[in-house]
Length: 295
Length: 336
Image (cartoon, rainbow over all chains, first blue to last red; front, side, top):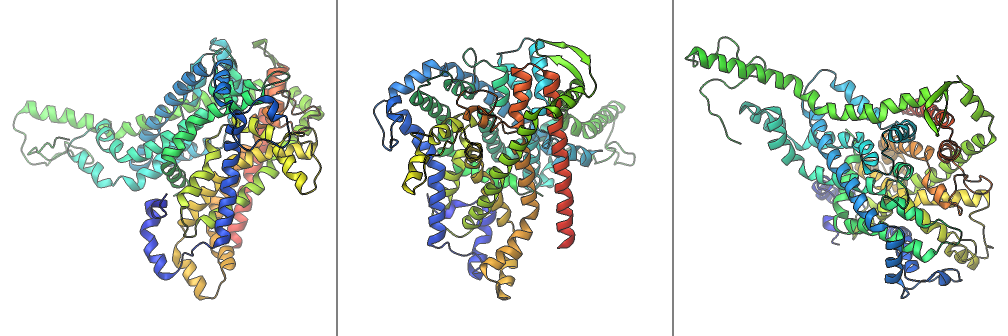
C-alpha cells in the first residue's frame, strides 16, 4: 500500500505545513521494528488458525506445533461446515447482521441529523441521554429480555436476536459528529426555501451527504453484530438455529474435541470479516478514527 | 429537486403566512390553500425533529431502560427459570445470599484482576503504538489495518485459538518459553497463568482499536504546540509528556471508561477458555468472572432473581467507578 494515501483527509491537508516546520518526525528503525512486531502479533494467531485447520488432530497434539500448512484443510473445512450446521449459521448471521446494520444506519442517520442540525426543545438533554445509554452494560437487560423471549416462545428464533440489536447510541453519536461538519446549514436552508418537507430534506439532502459515513457505520455495525456472542448464545441453540459465533463455540464441546476441526470452524467464522477488512480496511480504520474524535 | 419559483415569498422561518406579505395572493381559495400549506409547514418544522429521534428512544426504552428497571425489580424477588412469571417478594435476600457466597467474592476479585491485567497493558501499548503511528511512516495504512484485524475476529474464534496456543503440553507459547528455560506453565489450571491467558485474548482483540482512537486524538493536536515546545528545547519525550498526554486526557478518560465497562462484563473469553466449556471458570473457579457467575446463577442454577441481583450489583459498581473517574478527571483538570 502506498504511504501517501494512508491517512484521512484532515491530516493530509495539514501535512505540508508540518513537514515544512519539521514538526512531524520520520519514524526511525526502532519505530518500524516495534510496528512489525505488533503486526506479527496481530496476524499470527489468524495465520496459525489456518495452519492448524489444515492439519489433523494428532499432529496438533505433538511438539513442536506445526508452522507450515498441511493437506487437510479442505477436508476439515468440509467436516466443520457440516458438523456445526455452518451453512444455516451463515444465512442466519447474514440476516441478523444485515438487518441490524441497515436499521441502525437508517435510525442513526435521521436521529443524528436531528441532533446535528435541527433545533428543538430538549435537544441537549436528549443527546445527553443518548450518550448516557452507552454506559449501560448490556448484561443488565438480558434477564428480562430472556424472560420476554421465553414468554413469546421466540427461543431459537432470529427475531429474538435481531430486535434488541436495532439501536446503537454510538451510531447516533457517530452520525451526529459527521453531519455537523459534513452538511452545511445553507444546503438545508436552500431546500427549505424550496419548500421541501423534513422528510424530503432527509431523503434528498441528508442521505446523499451522509453516504460515506453511513457506509462506514454500516460496516462497523455489521462487524459488531456478526461477532456478537453473549445474547445469541443465550437464546439460540448451538445446533438447531445458531449464528456463526454460537455454532463455532459449539464446536469445542465434547470430551475429546477434534482441535483441527475447531480451528477450521473458527477460520470459517472469521474469514468473511477478514475479507471485508482486506477490501475496506482503510475505510474502516478511517471510520473508527473519525468516530473517536469527539466534539 | 425541483425549484418552485413562486412569486409569493417562500415560507419564512416562522409563520409563513404572516400578514404584510406582498399582495400576490389573488383569490380567497389560493389564500386558504397557502395558509394550510403554511400550517403543515409549521407542524413539520416543529415535530419532525422528534419524529427523527423517537425511534431510537422507543427502542431504547423497550430493550434497554425497561429491562434495566425490571432487572432491579426482579432482583428483589425469588424467580426461577422454570416459572419466570411466578415472582415471590423476598426483599434484599438475593443480595444477602450472593454477598454470603464465596464464589461471588471470588468472581468479583477475578473480574478486578482480569480487568486490570487486560486493560492497563492494553491501553499503555495502544498509547505507544499510536505515538509511533503518528510518525511519518511507509505503509502506515498496512500497519493500521493489520492491527485492527483482531477486532474483526469474534470472541468465539479468538478464544478457541488461544486455548490451543496456551495448551500446556503442545501449545505454541509453552514451546516458545522452553527455549528461554521456562518450564511448561499450566495456563488453564493455575490461577495467575489462566487469568493472564484470558486477559491476553482481550488485549489481542482491542489494542489496535484503542491505538487508532488515540492516534485520531493525537492528530487533532495542533502542530504549533509541538513547534513551540521544540523551540523551547523540549526533547521528544518531554514533548510527549507535556504536550501529547495533556491534550489526550479526555480521550484517555473515554477509553478507560469504555474499557472498564467492557472488563466488568468479560464473559465469552473465560467461558470458552475453560476446557469443559462450563460456567465455573475453571475447575477451581480460578478465572470465573462476574459475567460468568451471573450466567451460572441464572442459566445453570436457574435462579433468575439472584442473577438479577448480580446484574444490579455490577451496575452499582460501575456507577461508583464512573463517579471516581469523574472526580479524578476534575482533579486533574483543576491541577493543570
